[in-house]
Image 1 (tube, rainbow, N blue to C red):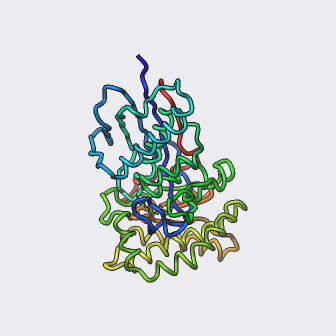
Image 2 (cartoon, protein in one colour):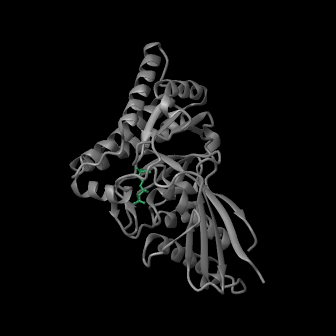
Image 3 (cartoon, protein in one colour):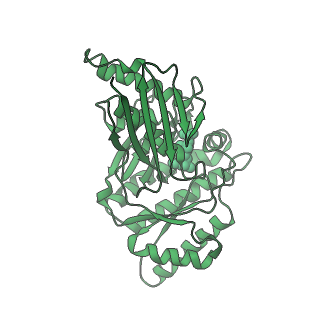
Length: 357
Ligand code: DP6
């Protein structure tokens, strides 16, 4: 008897240009393009094993050991259905001798090695790992960009975790979403000196989910319209150039400005949404001062902060500054000592690791 099983893992990504707003909530088509850095070094990953078997009666999913409902028509169901469709289209219809495993139900078990829903984008690595493990299980001969079209329908930001390094999610314009996918801007090896420090300010489950928060912003924020039309298109070009030029000053300036504007549109939402807490704001003040002193002494920017839909800071900095930044943070926030992780290594996106098949 053949065992149809595969395991894949995918890392978290942290956006420098934030995705915040959908023009189509079912297909998950964004109101603006976004750009992120894929983190790694094993700390922040989802690892997912999928198995297909003719004896399985229905698709089932376990997250961190606990079974979750797969809602009919929901995001997980959509991703599984789309992957089965791709298997049929790309493998079974073309090679009639291949087993018709797209007709079997699947059992999927996924583990995160970091707190879920703490503003650390667990849905991004989770859906990227889910799609990657099914792609492996089904032996799909397709590109990461093609898989990103499906991961996107699990969670928008997940489409960017199919690649390592620096990744853009092009918003596209087609109403069926066929041109809204992730592309690599530069691989990990392009700028290995760039590191990220994750400051876990709180690992509580966040108050307003990204999904409902961004929808409220789309419906109520006048500032969002300015952001998506005037601000983001230029920032996408400028930060791509900064990355290609390894220009940390420009990268840092744009990253911090975009984090600020994302939190500004959250505040401009009715009722307003606050994701950062007092510790988050103090870390901003610290990084601003750290950069100010460096620039005043004739140097450049030394660090850039960014915050997603939660209070945790991600600090991008050249590797040589990381130690000093940790020392500063531990000095000013002693009660939080031990909560900071120097994670990084611009790693290679989804790491496929087949078992059987
Ligand atoms: C602030 O991808 O979690 O992290 O598509 O509804 O699942 P859904 O939202 P999600 O939103 C992420 C928002 C963000 C910014 C970003 O990652 O670009």
